[in-house]
Image (tube, rainbow, N blue to C red; front, side, top):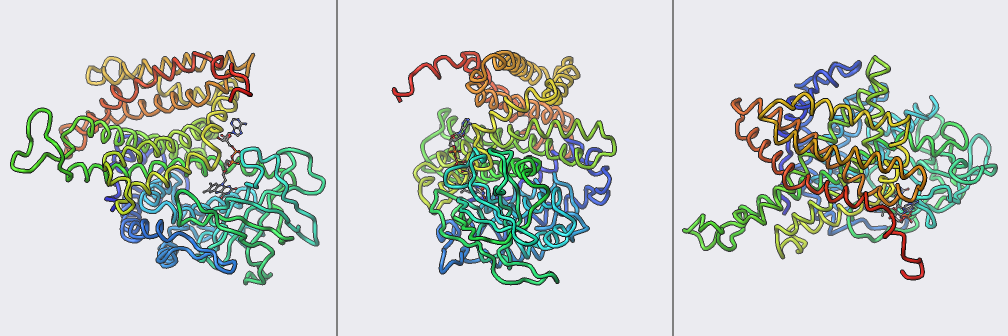
Length: 594
Ligand SMILES: Cc1cc2nc3c(=O)[nH]c(=O)nc-3n(C[C@H](O)[C@H](O)[C@H](O)COP(=O)(O)OP(=O)(O)OC[C@H]3O[C@@H](n4cnc5c(N)ncnc54)[C@H](O)[C@@H]3O)c2cc1C
């Protein structure tokens, strides 16, 4: 079984000792009530719910999966009750506006709750996760009538939502979609087939609100011709009550590698009634505006699973007896020493933990910037925060999901053969982690977004939102002997990142394939430098507290920071070499040779 206890200590450390939550988020207009006490209470309640209600359903949900019977999808045993409790406790409306019945809490706090959900039951989390995505889209782009009709139900969790983008012949290139929208009366008739639709059909809520990308008859070709529609499973009467079934149904459930309790559906739209969101042909633009939040959410999926893997592996390594310590028996009274004495097992555990805690810090830093971008009174501060969020979103989505897979895989390795056996739960974490590298824009596409869109935007202004604070940190700490090791390691890797950035910017201008060839390595280099910056800040905050009330916690943080700098960050040098090698060997072989 997976061992898990919500990492609240670490979350509080980040909020209050490293990232200055009180003066960054709690002082924003509208968040006056989200004080330290409220935040702590919310996290504690969320942790209780996830540990007690969601974790026990994770393994059984994976075993049972979802079942399609006569057009109805049944979620695994216990999911309905857990969802009901989740909605009743107000978790579906945590980050929704009070105008629609929500609690209006900061996005950054919601991000922390999402991590807890993903650690304990990622499949379950996909249902409210998708609903919140639909909520965000309607808040940003829906009409007043659409907001009034749909948002209170998405907030209280009685209705859920889906994103219907993918079709059999197109995923990344949505300009190719064929689903049609024909004007009819006040609305539209939607016809087409969507595949891989998460939460497309299920038994958790009384209605499902599908957000569907489709083309109007006069649509220009490509992504400029896509419009966005709301298509409910049950039509909604004028008085808000549920009407007859709409022409949308689940044709099949996909059989897949992981997240088996999340219903992945083929959805058939047979002249289903829909209403247009916003203006015609602007559907992709609307999807893009909500992508930051959705992609951050998927990054968090990787982190959540990785945390569950680390905690389980650490507990197992302290318990499993095999071999003797190289330095001599540590427990001579026992038949063997626990495997945690072996340096190679330590290597795995330390790597897992250093990646997780670094990733959590990075995600929270950027999550708090999302709150600033939305709420700050000063437009320049909003713009700066928004730039940082845009820049870092592909980095967080891709790196945290890559790391999620790496870390869960290491967790399985720590368990040896038992990790490969279903009942221990470790192989499920690996399988569940894999999809996050693919959906919400495959990780290769995130790298292209970073290099092709974010890097050149506003003449490098977005990049400067990250480069400047790193530079300032290095300058501020260059004379601090306690920080010398951190500053030197960060400065070296940062120098490589700056050089690689300049090289790609220059090469990419004359040959876009050079930028494409460098993109994935560049994103990883970027992420490692960002994690190094976070680790340096965590080390700094911890050093100040070494003689405080929690010396062990802070001492361990400094040890982990040193591990990151000396055992993980040096990968930046190999990545730099790969980037500078250019596209030649990658593109030289003729296509027929493959
Ligand atoms: C379990 C699951 C749940 C999902 N949930 C949803 C959902 O709720 N709603 C929804 O609409 N979709 C959903 N999807 C679909 C998912 O978003 C797509 O699978 C994903 O976007 C990739 O599209 P594709 O599968 O068509 O791959 P393709 O687009 O065919 O890509 C294949 C490979 O080629 C690469 N590639 C493609 N184009 C380029 C390019 N221009 N440059 C460089 N590399 C490129 C990609 O990075 C990828 O590695 C889900 C998928 C799964 C498996």
